[in-house]
Length: 400
Image 1 (cartoon, rainbow, N blue to C red):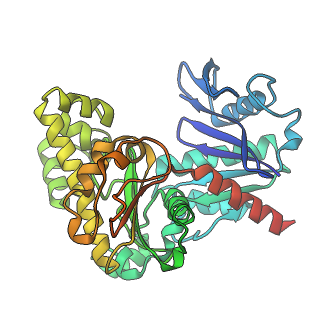
Image 2 (tube, helix red, strand yellow):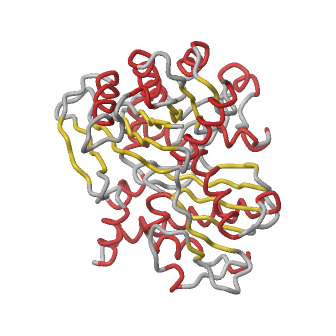
Image 3 (cartoon, rainbow, N blue to C red):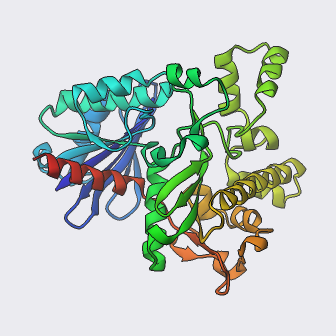
């Protein structure tokens, strides 16, 4: 089965085309600046190099149409005809309480995703545009939605509810949902395969640490807690997101800065975190370089960043009465050895013993802890797209 995986944002489309007979990637790339000037697609060629192609894309329909055009191109694609695409899988950030597992796209599913736009206005609106673009261009091709929060749907009520009047949950669905679920799902299973253990016997803490970051407690294969909340703003400190903050600090700053709720949300999401503390960048590579050059605020940002990750690891070890495996993944988790080292330092009481040589690596599946560490610390590069592709094959096959 040939499956196209689409991840549509507000102004972007990431795509991967799979031959699911052997799970090989046939073509991949990403469109950026959809609806804006100087829109382009960056395509990964067969030799691994990348090429930037400028193309006017006023909306997602034109963006998807151009992606299809590239898939048919001899240089950039791998198809003779769009009829070769058996199904399309979509990443959907927010499924709310309506969707707790992947599903075939129907009119009712589209309406459900649209009804949740208030909870994720930027993301869900972009996803819908992608689904409807495929509807228009390939109306008979089955589509599947894989929800980012679905893996977290096993959280118990005492973990996902906020301590506000219960009727606000009933009326407005205010609760912790969590995100990056497809990544947490992939790496929690993959690390068990890699180590040769049964996920149903393991207490795992998965650290998806990128520009956006979240941590999850996965006990015996099921999530019991996760750091992000109603939105991706909560939890650990991130590239430009503040993470956990006293709500009174938010209202206090709104008064002092004269910001509306929407302006304050933008401020906490896009001007805070590592960027806000360092005053330099949300890119951890730049902040680490500044720290090495003696920049004190860069050092402070790194110290805060690792400290907050460490606190969540300790909290989730307490919630599960121990931990067997700690997994690192995503852009920072896979590439910044200093963050991994600092975040795991001081966890010896849990049975964590790191190894500098093991930790000196990037982007590979590898045990980072010492051979005699009671808790295994492991890096597993994430692959959210293959999870989406597998779910798409399973659902479309069952539906035939």
